[in-house]
Amino acid sequence: MSFKRKKVWIILLAALSLAACHPGDPRLASRENFKSALQTYLSSHGDMCIGKFTWPIDVSYRDAQARSANSLQMPVMQKMGLVSAQQIEGQGQPVMRYQLTDAGRKFYVHKPIQSLTPQGTMLTHEGDFCYGTMQLDQVIGWSPVREVAGQPQTVVTYTYRIDAASWTRNADMRRVFPMVAMIVDSGGTLQLKQTLRLGDKGWAGEAATRY
Image 1 (cartoon, rainbow, N blue to C red):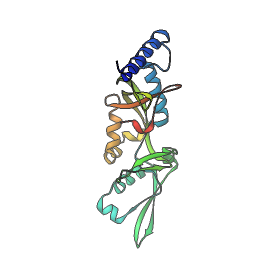
Image 2: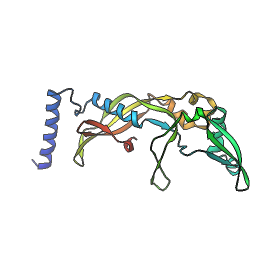
Image 3: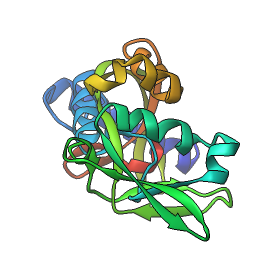
Image 4: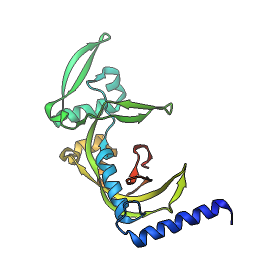
């Protein structure tokens, strides 16, 4: 038997021994432990946002002519009382400037949030406008535990539900934010996968591994 295969058998036997002697051990690969790890992960990384990181947002005449996303979405957000509008001058043409209202600021989450640029690099923003939080629905299953860079890990499959803001049910908002409507409606049906790694205190997820 090769050393590598012998090492795998030792890890498996150790896991079986832990399961038999310590059923409540947080290091075990079990549904309850993965459930707890996912709940902890989603409590920190479960914000569902629309990618409007920086305010105010200006909509130019050219944007309106091109029917850009902001030109369609901002008036609806204004109608919902989430933003206010003021016309200003910008490079010789009128520009509509949208600011978050007191009601809108309740949905702006101030925490580091990353986005992927078209060039494939990551940008970190100070916050984002969010429409709800993801909650764990149920753990569906997980892949066999394997060692990666000296650390046991697995990929857990789960379903989720969305604790969504009431304005996500508005017909106009759903029309101009179709992805938001789709995600809110998918709660309890679509599955996600999350990599969990075993540390000294048990299983935990990382922000960049949800897919």
